[in-house]
Image (tube, rainbow, N blue to C red):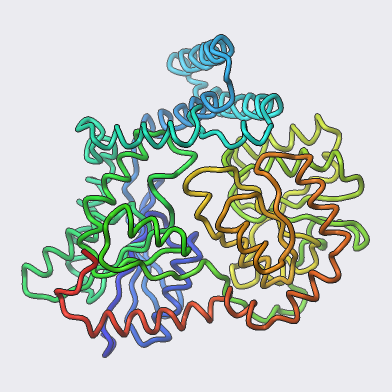
Length: 493
């Protein structure tokens, strides 16, 4: 073990898909720690591998096939609740889904029918968004109510014993049984939990270690504003929020991804110390000869404006706003860079076809995280199309930092954390979330001022450094040094 000790990173995914965790691992190695990362997979056996000098252990805690099917059907019902404001329409659509589900239960072709239902759910959502695409409608929460109604419902559920996380999230117990003993055997000096999913597992392991006389530190890295998650059923949100509330007070330190989210966490949990902010900024590497760029991958010519949206796609991220905006932007192309073609992506392609812009919408795959700035560099504008939700309103996304490292002007919806920075720093334009006509106007304004904006970003080395991973390494160096020196009594609460 390293002289500085061992850090165990816990992630509620397979680790390899989580750029933030991978960057932490590499940084901790540079700082002299022995590093092990533990993740989970629900879809098969676990595995073990090395990433650099770090050991990665992925534990298989597969749910049953029935659990996976039920979760998919729930996703479709959430889409419907968001899409339909008319009760008769909603009942009719739910009836169709119920008939699909009944057929799937009784026939061997259930897999095909489930996939068909998901695709149909995506098309229903796109059609409904077309009817309700005003900014006010777009700002509504996915369960059909506005943010205040949804927040009130989640708060009420958090007080309901039937919504306690042990009842709503039984998989957490399976995770504890599978990962807890492994964590005990590794004897880390720091347990750094990424996201809420394994917070209980990490906290209980630290408690056992301390009871045995080992002074282990616990760090909670809050990637999201859990209470404000948009694309998750309220009862599930309440379960995760309850899990966070139960264990965050045990953490020796809390880290998060944006200044506004740090303020919310400090307020909600009455933390004695404000969380440390480590941005989701990219690590940048010199591109290899022949490294791909978006225009090379999509075939968009150099003289055509190319908008890029980079990241996961779900209904709450508002990517359909960009597709709709293309109607008013002749000759402009959109590249959607994502690693998963889910039912929402397929629905967006159908929408593009219906609107007559399909030849200007392109899908592009992910590249390695450190290669993203070069990959994006020959695009014209970077887009963040988030719809309003409490989580999105405090989010400073990976893509925001990636666009800056690529030298791109940014157009963002008026989600405050990012909109305030774009306005304050003069990085591009802001439009009302969900308003395709306003987005098209913002694109035209940025295209007209593109040369100046690109020069403004290129010439500001301090700006680019502020939103880079090396700047976050400086934060982590101080953070881990202080954590190592702190006594076991120095907790956030």
